[in-house]
Length: 591
Image (cartoon, helix red, strand yellow):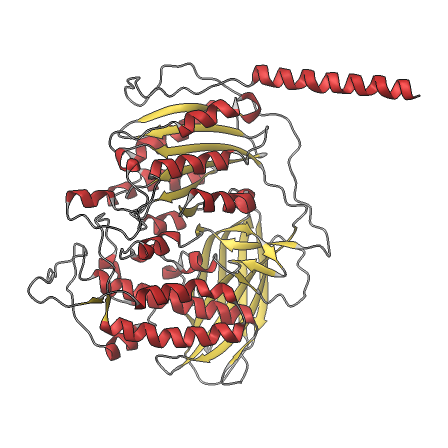
């Protein structure tokens, strides 16, 4: 018997060794990019390799009762790293570097499920609150939508991937992460600390970290672009590629030339023509750039138009911004594209940490076209915090393009909430009827109806989740209004008006998209603005800090120190002075 076992072991080891050697033989170095090779018309002369889809069974999701579940979070911006990095390096952030959904995704929330079991793909839960606004002294009404799923954590498996990485290798990628590349054409602004790594180095290290999460039956291809686009690696099974060789090629990349975003994206789309796709695979482009695509890229045949068109064909996009000078104006357009999301790389080390926990989530959209309709004679939706489509989500309807899976720890979900501010339009109280409709990734429609009644208490919070969401949304609102006013004296073509603390205080809680000045602040300019804070805003930040710290103590949540530290940093800045002689008094706004 022992001899038989020994023979079986020898045979097994020999078989595994043979299979390993066979895999090594098939794992070729299929890197095609040569920086010295002249490419014409963005087309390579190398032959196309066509790989067939394997007939493996789908990695199905099968919910089971009474097990820890995954959470859900809104697509679009998944962090506010660029906002934080600009402040840390002495720059004034751009207005879209901080979003409500991005800031929510920095935190975990009690979604208000209250022990109820969720057995569906998506189970919305509702919580309400009333509070006295610290600045306006008016009563505010809120309703939160908790984003829950019935998918067991242990059963969740992403689809196999057709992943195409599109990397910007233009000259600006050689600049330091913490400086503005285009300042060299104007007044150079020194940052507080100089990064030892270029944006190219951080980008390539991040790609290598990302590719380490791919499985043998995934496919990966790589496109590089400067003023032209180059196919660096065909879209092939990971099993058939020499991982070490590809890793070394990526890390050896050097920056060069100009920037043609749409050429890079178009070349990435071409790789999908080389394979046979099926429903077992998620098709995704990961687009990494440090640059600021200009407004021309909004056309149908340019970057954002192409991304929107690709999403209709089932090819989704993850945009990754590298460097403090990355133009966050694109976040709005990314967020309105089905299946799309956006990350900003603060450091390759931190991005690697994120990928270790969330790679499968970031490439797996689960819910599409979420719409919530509010039916009430007493209340209307006044503002939406945490939905990229907030500006069109007014009155009775809230819309969200995509929900992605999210981590769930100790019953709380990362970014798992959308907050509605309600406006009371009639006296008395009534039940608020809420109807949610959405579809799964196969287009199958679902709906859910519930009723919520606001309590008669003057001030209350149903749970810590809605209270925390209100506090964080206050933080984002204050920061956005500060950026609007501060940028008026920098690059933007609007009239600078010096205002006192009382005037600022009255409008600091206004939902930014409702400010008339809001559209004029959104610019594609790339030069930096020095970080300065006016005396009026310093007083405002100090008042807000006291309120924020009090709420943090009530919530007993140290994660809110993230926002508190940013407020402290701003309070330490030089006071922004109004320069009448050199003020930007340009008043024309291009329609």
